[in-house]
Length: 364
Image: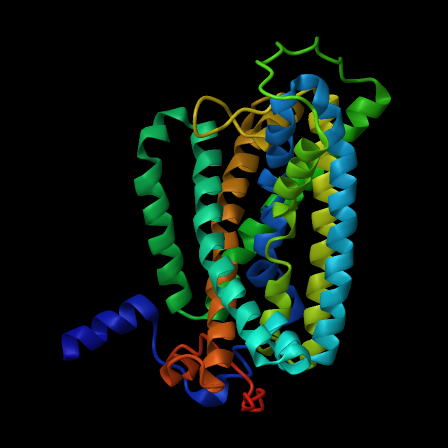
C-alpha cells in the first residue's frame, strides 16, 4: 500500500542498494560506539556488584574491592588478548562460534553460538535496567515508572537500529565519548584530590547489618559478580564483517582501545569508592549507584554531575545497542550454515547485517 510504504520510509529511511554495502561498513573509530559501548558501560555497575557482594560481611570487607578489581582487570586483558588472536585468525567474524566449530566440532560451536545469542538478549535486559537505575538515582521521582521507562528504551533502540548500523553509530557517537570524557575526568580529579590531600576523608560509615562471614566463597562471589566487566568484549570478534577493509586491523584497533578504557575505568572507580568510603546500596530499593555516589563526591552534585548521570544513562542504553549489532551477525552465520531459518541470513533493506559468503559450512 502506498501509505504503508511512505510510513516505512519515514520511520526507517529509504532502502539502500547492495552496492553501498562497503560504504555502510564501519571504520575503527565508528566501531567504538557500536561495539565497545557494552564493555565500557559495564564499569557503571561492575564495581557496585563487587561491593554489594562484599558488604554481606560488613563494611570492613570492602577493602578487598581493589585487589579483586585488579584480578578482574588482569582477566580482561587475558580475554581481550585471546580475542585479538581470534580476530586475526578468523577475519570472517563469528567469534567463539567459528573457533569452537572449526577446532572442536560444530556441536561445540553451536553451544558457543547459543550462549552468545542468549548473552545478547540478557545484555539488553541488564543494560537497560542499569540505565534506568542511574536515571532514578538522579531523579528519584521516576522510580515508580522504571518498568515503563525500560520498555520505552528498548523500543527506541529497536527503531534506531532498524534505520541501519551506520546511522546508529552516528547517533551513539557523542553519548559514548561524553561518558568517556566525564568518567575519565572524574577519575583523574578524584585521584588527584585523594593523593594531594585536598580531599578530607569522611568518618567511617554507619556499619550495616552483617549478614555473613568473610569467607573464600564470598570473595569468589564478589569476583564473579565483578566479572560483569567482561561483558561485551566478544562483540568485536563476532562482528568483524561489519568493519571496513582491512577488517581485522580495524577490529583489533577498536578492541585495543576498548580494553584500555575498560581496565582504567574499573580500577579508577573502585579506588575512588574505597578512598571515599562509599557503602553500596541496592539502587532499585533505597539507594544510589556507586558511580553516582563517586560522581557526586567529585563533582559536588552540580551540573557536571548531572551530565555524568545522563551520559551514564545513555551509554548503558547503548550497551544494549551492542546486542542489536552483534546478535544479527551471529544469527546470520548460523542461518548460512543451516542451523537457523535461512531468511535470517538476508541483508535488510538498510543493510543492517553482513556476513561473509565464505562462512564455514557444517560438516556431517
